[in-house]
Image (cartoon, rainbow, N blue to C red; front, side, top):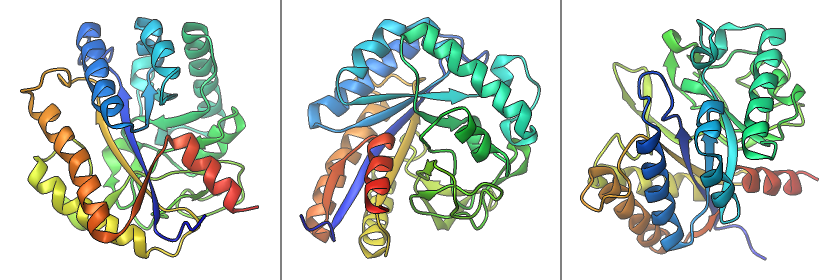
Length: 288
């Protein structure tokens, strides 16, 4: 099969309704069901990155979604686990211990072990990818290239912008780990917040008109990219009323889905719905 015009698209959502600043499980469940309905209506795939405490709060819903086109991965915010820093401030040993404990909590709650991972706030240091590989993850989506937010310990200036094997000692390089990193899609030409953050396909950040221009640009970029696997990764959070048809995020996401389809036709791109794990599998297969 000719894959020269093929672009994988993964919708991701960070499930963190149990965060102390949110603490609204009912909202988290409603949001996630509405989000899943939008994707199911159009046959799209998604990876859910779930805090251990969210996994414990609604395991039945996660098990239900895992039977469909949803991958259930692990999300990790150290502050929610009694720590006082972001992931990128901890040593290799500390990160291994923290992620291992989170895996156990998650697995005990939902009954299966996660294979994909995302740090909170895209926080990482050079020991994050080795630690993530050490605890058994096969893939992750913890980088947002050109994000430069030191307060979150999230510095990705110069990071690899495409799917790649992570490096054992430098988070900004392609490397030798048996861990596939699938970066979140951003536009380094459009920096926000005084140059600290690239515009990304975050559903709640812009209206559909603004998202249209970024989708258009990212499809052109990915089609032209000389890479083994081309991918676009969106993101959002389960703290918005995706189940309400009059909600701004519901309206925006629904239009984004339609715009992906129309713009793919315009640029003669074949969109392939995928989870982070499926993108990683495709990359591994292309690297043999």
